[in-house]
Structures are given as structure tokens and as C-alpha cells.
Image (cartoon, rainbow, N blue to C red; front, side, top):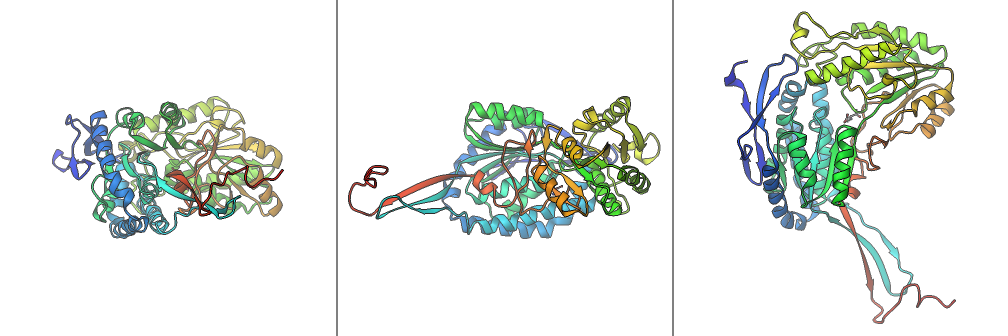
Length: 500
Ligand code: UN1
């Protein structure tokens, strides 16, 4: 690619489309072929300070705008996303390597969220309850918090930001967002739908750059009252520590090590379809990806044999080719990390069933590709059984019975998504009850959460919050309790209503 076609990207601070204050840029590569796609601002604390000041200045008017009117802007933004879906998908597929079909799905998830969040402008319900005293009532209202700091990952460059930004906005907060440095243009194009829909200047500000420069400055900024982050558990832990010192409200969406339990009575063909899609869709680069197959009893041999046959038919290649099943890994560092896990798994005694080698010849050698990889007889408690790989790697753990399957499912530090394949409704319901995870699917893959249901996990996957559905509206508001005494006299709670 010639230098002339390399795009220059921008921040957006208040009404201004600007570069980093000190003019620095970072390179954005195409993982399919290693070419240079664009240069984005490599911003720093100065840029964050300006963005936070713009967000703070915009807060008064935005928070005073009636919530239904805020919602209408989100509806208009949703309509623009529908119009621009293909154009944004094309950029996303090039920036982070997601297949076009999946890139369209990523944007669709944001569109779904826009409809939900827009309508929430006419809800944002409070509660009313009877008072313990006569001629007195109690009720609650929701109030916006202030400036929200949003830091997101590259693997869902539009969907995941939409889960955070759209609820934050309809609740009346203003936002400073750092999109991932791997997908800065996808992020900018999503934000542009909101600006073009009529979002006032300063309500949503975008600051491009690296986590340790821009992200850290957002987390540490005293005028950012609420933070939401999707990324690794290690970074989430640091953010929580810093934010804790400031007493900030924080929502963290972190790692996963998602299991599929296959029982001997399962429909094996259905399970294989679900495991292949869950493990190798988006090249395994989802926090919901199927990372462990826990095969119970004699189903192990059958399911592994079918998986191996089918995995070999999956095509690895350009995300722009509709015949391709698995696109590239986002960058070289991740590719090496994934391969390192596979080597470690083999060293720890697992059997390599298929994949497991970085392509060194032909077209695939020019990008960051990794084949669908299955390791069988991975030992419970070994590295591959416990750590998040974030690539197209499936570890098969063989167990004797249902109880052992649950024990193994729960032995990891994470608890995001999970699944069981069985025809036995009692076992399915027991799995729903016993698996430590935020999401459990029955006879369906671990990926594919819908925008109107809560999304999030337990243990080291998060800190107790949920995105999606009705829950983020609680997170992005403060509750105000109001008592109205219309008795005309002093009434003392806990005292005047008692005669004991
Ligand atoms: C993520 O990987 O961070 O359930 C989000 C799914 C998608 C969202 C994944 N709807 O796989």
C-alpha cells in the first residue's frame, strides 16, 4: 500500500476534529496482510484533560435535556447506523480482521442497543412506596452522574462501546471514550452516527491512543466520576485500584474461559455445530468464545472425531472473502501468545488433534493467521485448562460424569459464558443452577448474547455489574429519594408512628 492511501484519523473534543495536542500519531495495521491502514492520534493526558473539560461543560445542558429527547437522538443515530452498516463493516473487517458477516453483526448489536436505549428515555423508572407515616409519600428519581469514562477493546469495536455509551448518554451523562488503538476508525464512525444525529458538542468526546497513556489519564482524572471498561483482567484490576482511591463507580467486563459441557445423550451434530461456531467464530477472539469442551463419558471420542473432521474443512483467510470461515488474529503479539499457549499445552501432555502451527507459506504467511486448533486430553488444572487464550484454540477435557463436569467448569478464575448440550431437561436445569457464570446456554453455543439481556460474569470476569438489557441504566444513574410530607405538621419517622 502506498503512503498516499494511508488515512489520517482524528480525535473529537467538543465540536473539534483534532489531532493529538503534541501531534504524535500511531500506526494502525491491517492484520490480513500487515499493510499500514491509517494513522491515529497518539493522544496523551493533555488531550484527555481537554476532552474531560468539554464533557464537563456539556453536562449541564445535556443532563437538563428531557430524557425522551435524549432518546430521540439515539433513535436517529440508530437509523444512521442502519444506513452506514456496510461502510462501517468494511472498515472494521480491515482494521481488526473480523469477517464481514460478523462485522455486520457487531454493528447490528449496536443498532439493537440504540433502539433499546432510545426507548429507555421514556422509562428510567423510579419507585414509589407507602410511607410509614400518614400524609407522607416516598419515591425515587434517577439522576445522571456526570462525566463517564469509557475504555473499550478491539474485538467488538462498535457493539461493546454501544452497550456503554448509549445507556450513559440516555441517562444524561456526558462521555469521554477511548476506542481501541487497533480499531480507531470503526470507533470514530460509530461515534459519528451520534454526532450526525444531533448530539450536542462535548456530550461525546473521542480520544484515540494507548491504554497506558489515554486510558490511564481517563481513569485517574478527578472529573470523571464513572468508568466502564472491557478488556483484560490484569488491566481491569489496575483500573479498579486507581478508581477505588477516587471512590469512582466502575463497571468491569474482563476475561472468560467459557466451557461447553457435552453429555453422552447430546445431539452430537448439534453440539459440534455450536462448538465450532463458539470456538472458531471471530477466530476465537471473543470474551465469550468456547475455550473448553468438557466431554462427559463415552461422548468424548465421538465428539472429538466429528470436530476434527469438520475443523479441517474450515477456511482460514481474508475477512473480506465470503467463503472464509476464520479471519486473522488481530496482531503479531496476539498470534505469538496464542501459539505459545498451544506449545505449552502440548508440553503439559495434551494431544494436538488439528491446527497448532503458524502458516509460513502462501497468502496466509503475509498476515497474522492461525488455524482452528483442537487439543484433546487437556488435563484439568493445567495451563490450557485455566488461562484465557483469546484465539481459535479449543481444549478438550475428558471427565467421567456430570458432577465432575461441573467441578471442572467451575475450576477457573473466570465465569462469563457457559453451555450444556443434553436432551435431559433435569441435567440442563442442574447445570443452569450449578455453573458459576453470568450466562448459561442450553443446547446453544457460548457466543451470541442479545442486546436486551444482561451481559457479564462472575468471579474474575467482572466486579458485579452487567451491561445489556435493563441493568446499565441503574449503573449510569444515581438514585435520589424524595419524601413529601403533606400533613402540615412535624412527623418523626420511627417515633411518632409507634405506641410501643
Ligand atoms: C465480547 O467478546 O467482548 O455474546 C462481547 C457474544 C457477543 C458479544 C461478545 N454478542 O459473543
